[in-house]
Image 1 (cartoon, rainbow, N blue to C red):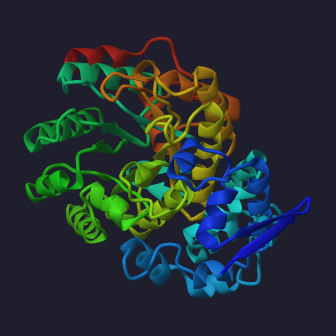
Image 2 (tube, one colour; image 1 turned 135 degrees about the horizontal axis):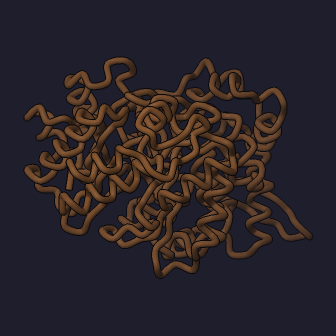
Length: 459
């Protein structure tokens, strides 16, 4: 089915839903490289105008990637809540945007519609929104996940403490963890990207983190971000796996390039539940995504990178995750060229994830060869803090010396909490106070006994 729009006597025809979605996307280098971006600003506006008039029903009746050949499409179409969607089915993309920005779309209402939304609808409406629209709606969403800490409550802002080391040196990792804990970081998870996927080394790191948690009675979750097959092997050995991590994407082919399938994720989910480490909620999955992941493996199926990203959120949602985050600028300038594109993509990703009911965090990051700098990262961090992002990364000095990219620091988390008047997760905030790291108002104290104890016992 073709979609049309006329601007200044110029007639624009978009041959199908996939095309109009791609042409309506704000400018980004990945779509240009894929040959699917709008050829001019006017064509982009025309596509956005055409998109605004498309009924939401069209997204249910049309597969932008073939149902029979793509298991992600089958997951989406077989699992959205059809009764909930019926409440929204009278809308066009444009009227849905207007409703989302109305007083009727409060936190309770947005929570109630999440499972009725397919990712293509969420991606579509984001494309006709200004940045402030994306922030406004996301801020109204509250998606709470629970393990040993409670993440996503309004008035709270959490962090993943990311103590990576280029050769998994135990002392180097522990030094970073101590630094992060003493600056109030780690309430979402202490998560290590291992330099090697060797099962023995990953198991050692898991034991290291679990012993730290037990010794100091820290309300925390740990994760070593190995491939899901390695984690499965360690679960069989009864290793202390809190969270199963995996990078995911929005097409079957892209997930295959990661060495995964939906059946493998289901196997890992069920195996981790059998460990009974979070029986209260069974939220034991941690997913990372990023715009450009599908295109980078030549698996985008002609779909724009932002819509592919939203489809990845449908995969995440299916497995009841504890944490999800986009590593928004990590893949590089081939996909998000500069600070402007990274900022826009970060707001889109957060909006789409939250609207679909995900406990959404963000790795506010960039690579050293992107046309972006620390000021761009500060801007995105601030905007997402206002938008109600569940968690950010806490990296020593904001410079990940193992993955070689720029992220956010322990001090950045303090800044974000201060300007938005937010605190860490309640359980973690209580621990910080009890250990003398913070005062009754949550402010850091200059010295504390725990610092000496941690240093003497772990290094």
